[in-house]
Amino acid sequence: MDYKISELVALTHVPKSTILYYIKEGLLPEAIKLKSNVHCYSNEHVELIKYIKYMQQEMGSSIEEIKGILQHKNQSMASSFSMLAPLMETLSAIPPTAKHYTKKEFIHYFDVNLVLLEQLLRDEILVPTGSDDFTDKEASIIRLIEDYIEIGLEYTLLQEYVSQAKILANLECQLQQQLCKRRTDETFSTLWKIMFETLFNAKSYLFSRYTHKGLIKVLQDEIKLKKEVV
Image: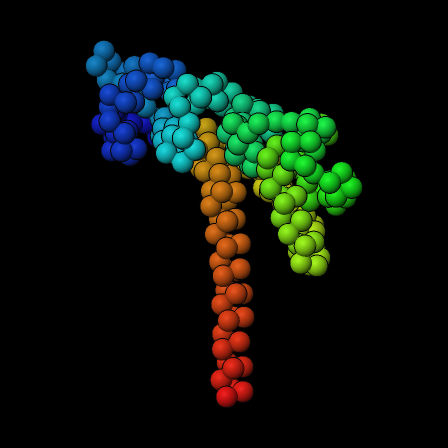
């Protein structure tokens, strides 16, 4: 479908000056010039503007970062690392500012028990970025495990987290592959929104809500039992 600039503004809620700026910066393709003062925009412009807005508002991406990403927009999600980069960086759970340590430095700096470290690596509860690349994130998990051990509690819940995380990761990769197959210029922003919102919004919402429901039930059952005893 073709749009005049006024219609594009109305559809995207983005000012004309901003749209022209996006075109100037290479984030949007040039409009088709029908007459000297009449320019025609397409659904691709709508989708790309939605994507730009989403990346700015939800991912905090800069114009330069988005520009770099969109240079590869015609590649598949699977083959374009630059497009996956904002997603991958956030999913890594390791902040970009994190300090990295070799294994030897990590053990010394955080006073880590080597036997426990090796066990947690085998249990896959620790997932460092490399065999010789650790951060304070791994240290925080080790401290948590030490708390489990201190009170004589098995960390079976964390081991179950690992099992479920692997299953979930496989499903999420399948989702990404399905989205790739549906990739068109007309669905570009919607596919990326599905990917981001599923991983960063829906997942945390569902996990938190069901944990909340479970804990509420435990409390309700406890209160009910106390009333029955009285």
